[in-house]
Length: 130
Image (tube, rainbow, N blue to C red):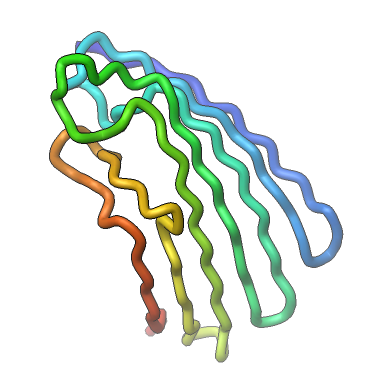
């Protein structure tokens, strides 16, 4: 089976520290089993901050239009999630980061019927480059 899609994105720098981006994605598939993401319409908006060694972002995602009339998955026909991320670069090789994902605590499938969101979660980590 064939799937088709389109994605449109726009990014704008507001000043030396802030930028934003907006986007829309549309996926068309003949059968649910062909989909990698169950919702055909996805809208995104993000706000990004960068100053020196600090970076932060807030990303909102809204999806709509999934026909779950056959109850093939637990995913709702539409949902909205917010993700908040921040990082601090100690040097060129070590970055500390934190992620607060799915702040709306929605349960949804994001990669077909077998992968579900973990709900609201918090992650702290260190990225080391060798």
